[in-house]
Length: 71
Image 1 (cartoon, one colour):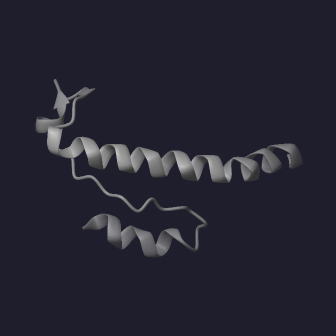
Image 2 (tube, one colour):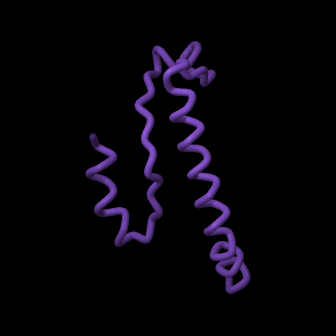
């Protein structure tokens, strides 16, 4: 998958990667290609991805605040 190939160069750029991956389809998981309505089989995966994203955001919050204070 393309995501795996992007993880190696993301590390040296100090980008945090999120472990869970969800393969979504524009046709199957979005209504009118705009409103996100994941298929039932993707719901748990999407929740896992969002949970990890929120955990990273909270963990990196102090770094963002320190960066803003230094600027």
